[in-house]
Length: 156
Length: 156
DNA sequence: GAAAATCGTCAATCTAGTTGACGATCTCGA
DNA sequence: TCGAGATCGTCAACTAGATTGACGATTTTC
Image (tube, each protein chain N blue to C red):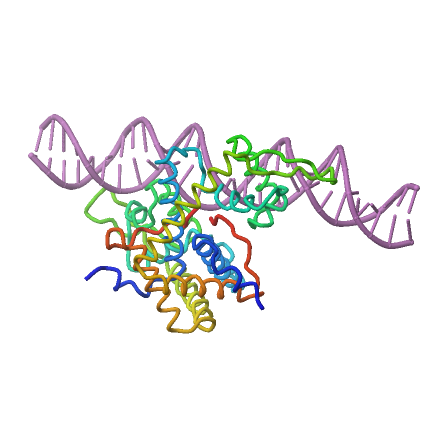
């Protein structure tokens, strides 16, 4: 008998922590294996947010649940790594929009592919239906407070 | 219609991040409300591990998935805050066991009570059975690799 | 008994965030 | 229209929580 069944009463928080870390670690290990060695975990949600189009640092900060200063530092790292660049200025002279470079878009797509694989492995273990239920239940609980999904944050 | 249903395809990793953060934030908010104002998120899993009995810093490090140096710093913080103390030395002169003080035990029990309340709120939203399924599914996936539950780490 | 491993700690460094301040720019209402 | 106030991005200083590397003191092993 596996150890798993004994631990069914482990705190959810602990399970979330482990599950999150496992996904992110596996993702970055596979990225590294494919040559993407300068990708930091913090980039993930930012690349995802930038996928849809240019964003200001402040907007990115709001989406990620961090201060604009922190977002600004993250953007700086993305610029230096060549995954993002300053886009065309809008009418507003205060805003300096950020957008993905081709390299950044390539990374985003590669990561998305790997990540899909990882979730498929989950489906292999617990089944498609249970996975869908898990996702749906998570969404209902975390948006229970105000009906909206709160911002992410790459945690502590 | 709530926003929740639209987002069912959000990455699990993101949901885990949000769910974890929400639980930990709510827990510490309630702890603070009850007067426990010097509790840092990192203490949580350490108090839990120490609940069963004395541990060395190195053992704590292994359980939490961090280096012994990091565990040592965490222990130092727990000692200074009065939640732990050096216990009786074993035969091994290298080991300096750590154990909970009464104050630490009180904190641990308070936190556990609050945490149980939080999980009960989850049960109120998705139901007892779905909550049990969620927990069981998480456990099976994260222990799928080697049949054992990996160490926690308070993440990034 | 000597070689090797382990325990705890020190020191330096890194990542990822925070708060506070500030100049530049935009918006809105008197 | 113009001035008060809000917002954008950045600078600086700091904090939390981790890392690697080194080392003395012990213990274990052969």
